[in-house]
Each structure stands twice: as C-alpha cells, then as structure tokens.
Length: 63
Image (cartoon, rainbow, N blue to C red):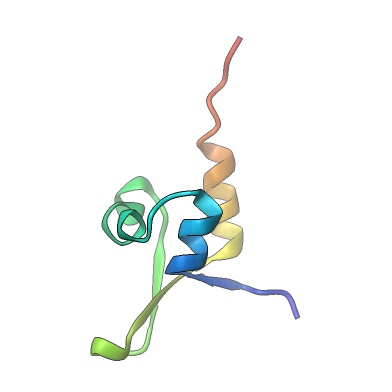
C-alpha cells in the first residue's frame, strides 16, 4: 500500500528542515496540513503528493 500521508517528523526529514519549522512555518510557506483527531490527540499530517508538488515549485530557475 502506498503511503498517502506523512507525519510532521517524516515531512521535516523529507524537506531537510526541523520539526519546529514544520509546525511554525509550513502553512505560511504554502504546505497544507491535515489534522486527524481532536484536541491534544490531534495529529498534523501532510499529503505526500502535495509535499512533493510544493518541493518542485520551490525550485529556482537559474541560468
């Protein structure tokens, strides 16, 4: 089965960023988090395909 969502830690590792950055900046940077559960038991996750698309959009065009 193909993994559809990544945890915050997996997303941070994939992006080579820190976990606090993902919590603090990812939504501002354009990554859309999904919340599964409520309150303290709620978990943020990111859709793998959306993270991959976001990464491709961050590529700088150079000479």
